[in-house]
Length: 305
Length: 156
Image (cartoon, rainbow over all chains, first blue to last red):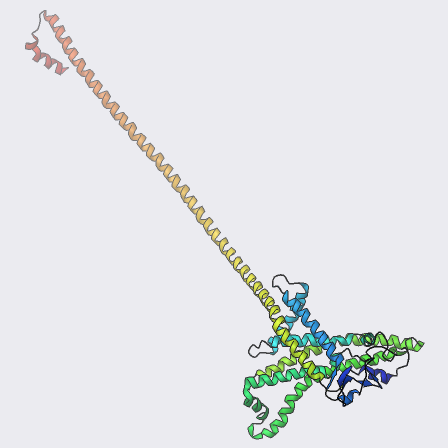
């Protein structure tokens, strides 16, 4: 790497730091300060990330997820607009395959009365999460290098010094989606069972109404844990995958400096390839799981006990 | 890795994308999909119906053919019978005609014979009278002897 040697800890930490824009304790909005300098060249940073507290936005997470989501809906919209039943294009065939897959999942897992939200919801989740997960397969230093003006992160100058390309490795992204699902679960639970019915489900089971306090101790954590786990599962899987990629990337550190460095680099390439292949599975599986679990939980919100 | 307002930004984006998909993507693709599914099932149904109809038509064709054959055979039989009948009729008519002609010829013949006989008789009578006149040398009073002559002529 160019000017200063990065040690492993710095390298890992660098890859785990989001590009953050937030409100500092002194009331000003700015990018965060990391190791004494602003994350974006040419801006004044008045505090670091932990000082910002709640009012901060992970710009890279939002940018990547919205970018991918926009790409998704423009692509889908184009296909939907030109959709013809008699003469489908190849792209339409591909999208239809996806829609059929999602529709079958909806029909299998969501057996309650027809709810027109379920199909679009499941499709959006599956495709969007899949695209976000897919960012994990982009070489780990490529996008940070590009946004930093084609310079290594620790080089002098540069543009944007911090950029995480994988939105789901930031807990806010999966939890934001899980929050949406949580709101839907509450909405449909109360809508279908009434507020009383919903609360009764949480308090009168499994031991009947005279054991309500104990029931609550059993039911409430279970009810919320599964919704929390929906987001955490996605975050955990992708964060761990990202972490492995970062660790593998450390193998390339001495590629141009020594014979052992070259050997380590070659080993790293092999490892990177193997992990990437394995990760394709995780990418699809986690997107699929998020979708199916959403449907299952919403089905439970529609069920009467 | 800390919770902050990004959470709500993500939530908003999520809601927007779901809304957009629900409004502008899902129904159109599903419509095309279901329309095609319907077209295919309709097509299959039409094909099986067509096949059934074809089978029925084949059966009907065989039936009609059978009937036509039978009818043709009947017609031929009828024609044959009629022809036979005609021949029979013609034969019997000819027979009758021949008989009739024979009978009338016979009666003509009889009449002619009778007439000739009659003529001969009268001539014979005349001859007999003439002969008798010659023999007797005198005229016979025809009026007186006519009774005798008639008698002779009768006996001839």
